[in-house]
Length: 319
Image: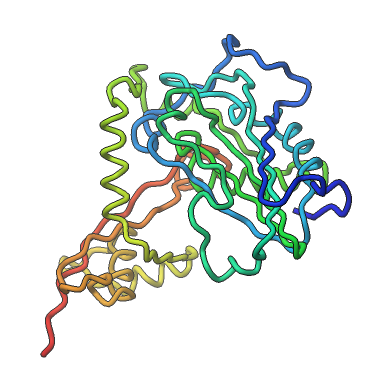
């Protein structure tokens, strides 16, 4: 986002937070509002216990006042972000997005370009149990302005409403609206067609069968078994075709995308993924399904990723 020279929170004391709820422009808060965004089983079960919370750093201070105004206009396009979760849908009740403003007396945005900040240092991360219960917001925003005229923008959303593609697309669209007054592209959070295609009998799961204790256990297990060191692999269609051609299969068939990517990951990770005991390691990578089938359109804002899972064989020990 472009920074604004005037209107920056100069009256806010250093290291003091100011929290204000931002609502949909010209729409009143209404907790009894009956409109809703139905959710899919993928949203309700697979993604319910995660909060996505990236941070962007900028040269120059950001103007919270202008960002709140553009966010209010942006929420008209995606009202679910200002709602609250129900048992199997998002209630479009316009209960607001918490917007936190902070001035930092110490440090600089440059300090965090190479070193990842602690989680929650520049984002307002609410407990996922409260989000699932409908008592905490689906989305939060935090702006931190440093004294050296650098700044940080942290945006957090519940994984129930969407995956990483969804979050980054929403922030990009908000930036477009803030800077240029318009949003381009065809994006939609509507799950109607997805539910029709994948649940033709109309049966849908709810979180009622997944109590908070069970969700917490799943969350803790994932946190425990996902290491801090992560690797990311990006492939174009041409690169993926070349990669598939280089992976032999014992039965002479063409390897699947899963097999090709896992084989590449095993090679890059040295066949052991960092395990000190050289034992076999399970690898999981995320594939974006948008535009690859009729089920998920290129501009679908929701959860449309699947995991590619494979095993790195044990690496022989060397004397």
